[in-house]
Amino acid sequence: MDSALAVTPEAIPKYPGLRNFIGGRFITGDERHLDVLNPSDGSVISRVPLSSPSDVDAAVKAAAQAFASWSMTPIKERAQVFYRYRALLERDFDVLAALITEEHGKLRKEAEAEILKALELIEFACSLPQIVPGEVLEVSRGVECRVDRYPIGVVASITPFNFPSMVPHWTIPNALALGNCMVLKPSELVPLSAARIAALLAEAGLPAGVFNVVHGGQEVVEAICDHPGIAAVSFVGSTRVAKLVYRRATASLKRALALGGAKNHLFVLPDANPDLTAASVVASMSGCTGQRCMAGSVMLALSATDHIVRRLVDHAAGIVPGEGIGPVISRQAKERIERYIGEAESEGATILLDGRGATVPGREGGFWIGPTILDRVHPSMRIAQEEVFGPVLAIVRVSDLEEAVAVENASPYGNAASVFTESGSSARYVAERASAGMIGVNVGVPVPREPFSFGGWNESKFGAGDITGRGSIELWTRAKKTTTRWGPE
Ligand code: NAD
Image (cartoon, rainbow, N blue to C red; front, side, top):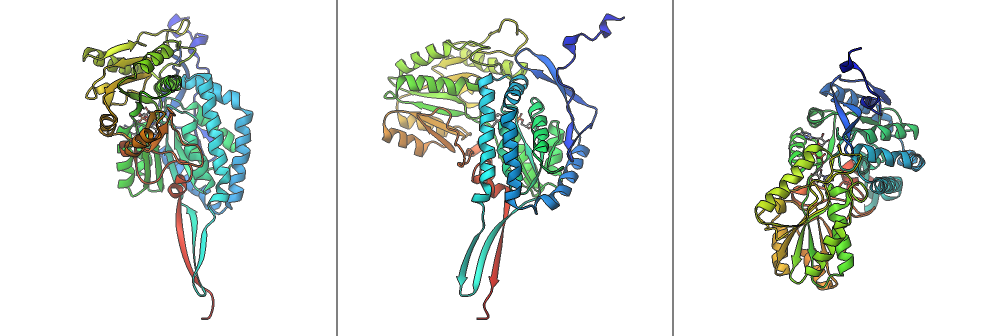
């Protein structure tokens, strides 16, 4: 036998090739595929189809067919599916968390946090019947005005690689409980969780066609933006693609909400609690290997904060790749992050902690990089301005709060900003002036919990409303205003 043709056990992907989920069935589509890698060792674990516009069309047709009866199903009944679905996620908690770790690389406890957040998002969807009853008022004698919320039709959700389960759950439960049918296009880098979501929703009793998954990349996204049968598009990903999607979807007269990238600033004041601040800053910059749109990546250090800087470097230096921090998503991502660090170093930044060249014994093929902290970064450097999306903290020294706010305000992004201080007035000064949609006070990753909505400002979000919580009701429904005259007078 020709040894070049021999298939070794390691060469067989662990999971069978993925298929699109359309009309309640997993179906074979286009023959083009991409390998799905485990970022912690670089091994191939599955294959994902690169679907075409005709697959999008088939999914939209299935969704449109299901919409007729799903949209007429009372919301209390629709919510029941999500009570059952939540129980299935709890049942499969370990398997789902393990799958996230495999396809994304994040630590087990980070993967578990994703599923816990998904459960919270589903709970909010279960509470929608209590939140969305219409309004009614007798506006003059015998005349009544009422407002009712209706679903908008077939909607699409396009998601990024960094949260394979949580970000799809930002949109799926609310959009569906509110009566829409959906086509999900998950990231082609982490498609396995999406397939499990589809199977579990079906097991929970969701009617065929209400939820569909079309795998692929740019071609699928463009077909979604252009398809006349899709009424609304939500997108979460980089700012570059968010702009493309927002422009293209609205050009074909769709409702669109596109969440983009981020550059989040952490204001550290001399009176901040040193231990809490050091731990929070390190968790913010290195949690999920810095691959979070809420990751703090620039620390604005006011004068007399050297004691906090020392503490956080000590803390970050104790984080061992493979134990306290996972890999980044791909070889290209690792190279990109290392380029940013090298460039800043050559421009004069001081490296206090260098995570380049990290390896994990037995997993040398993984895309590892340890926590990295640079000091004396100038705000004009690319590392201080652009989204690095890795475990890298750029410390910019500022002399006062006014200068710190000016640096933050100059960023085109606006997802989050956090301030660490014991002074209420300083915290308020920053909270009022930071140009960001989500603010933390002594909190490094200020993600709003349900029922509050998630969403940034500026180039971190295009479109009105927010993607989760109460803000999402406006996104996924349209209001019908009815005026009725009753009495003969
Ligand atoms: P990405 O923009 O590369 O990909 C997002 C989605 O767009 C994927 O499904 C991908 O297949 C698709 N896509 C990629 N290139 C495309 C193109 N040229 N045309 C059309 N579609 C395209 O983002 P990513 O690397 O998967 O995720 C990381 C980014 O997402 C970071 O910038 C991060 O800040 C951002 N993000 C933002 C939020 C938020 O709430 N603002 C949340 C999570 C992630």
